[in-house]
Length: 166
Length: 274
Image 1 (cartoon, chains in turn brown, orange):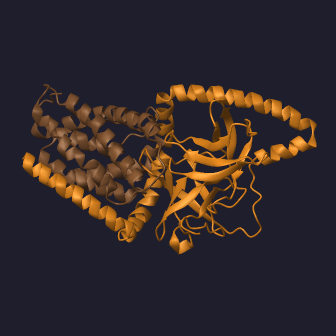
Image 2 (cartoon, chains in turn orange, cyan):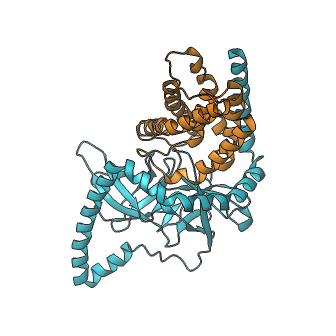
Image 3 (cartoon, chains in turn green, red):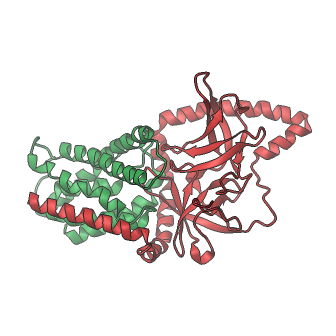
């Protein structure tokens, strides 16, 4: 899997995210396929690939949503720093850090969007937004990450002819 | 590596802020318009193909909500049966039933631009849809958008050459001056983060009851008077509170919008107008 393939996968995921996922609801929240895919990529694949994919994904989402171009890129940017959790090697498996990263990454992503809305003077219900949107979205994305992580781990190791180690 | 990552992170953040600033001046509008126009048909096809699967997954994980909905619908059904029996007996009640059927009368001078919804905002915090009409069709920011039956769904919040974004009434940033059609009690219908509608600032003593029809009041000049918004489904009141909590259900199914009408003949007052 090269960075080019990653860009194509992310572009398709952004399209699916915009066209299909608004019809899906997991625990009342809409899962973020692009974010889950990025988290899996950052954990499974070499760091340098993720460095390019994160801003590229932000731009692709920005072109397909109603928010100002750059907002999704800004909201995804903290993933670049948070992905360093992989280097800490707190647990043997990479799946647990990936799950935590998906949940925390979602909270940070939605919080940045929420803050931007607040800065632009929009009327917001903070408590309801956190309880009804941020927390369910974090759970939804953590659940969505599991199959994506598994598939990416298999695909990644298949290229090297090794057995997957979850 | 960490230093490099932090440097790259700083660069990405700076670039994002630059993009957002440039976006406010419309620099990327032609690019966004082109991308949305080109990907629109693909997205519509993808959505149509996956709708049955989406229904299945949503129903599977929303059992509690469905159960509550079922209970509410049973109560609503019972209430409607009672209403129906009464309506059958009196002509006056029959006219009320016609009002509830949500067929908009409108004005003879209304100019409506038909449009199709091809995309929904992919984020969790906003409730917006994209329509296939833009400035080239005369659509402008602030214009009111209705369903093909004529009930209010929102207003245009962003417009490109061939595409416009419509902020739905259920969006948490939406607030519409409204009133109860029968008693003329006024308030503000506001969206919530979970996609619900609440009529705010309704005095505790006001005459509002379940089943009342809510229409736009026209106050503020952002919407014409008398556009249908929804129906009161629950009224919560407490002697300790100044205002009632009035829950409103939109007349239109906003989760499955396909064809809409842009009210071209009504131009809203600018927010900063005297």
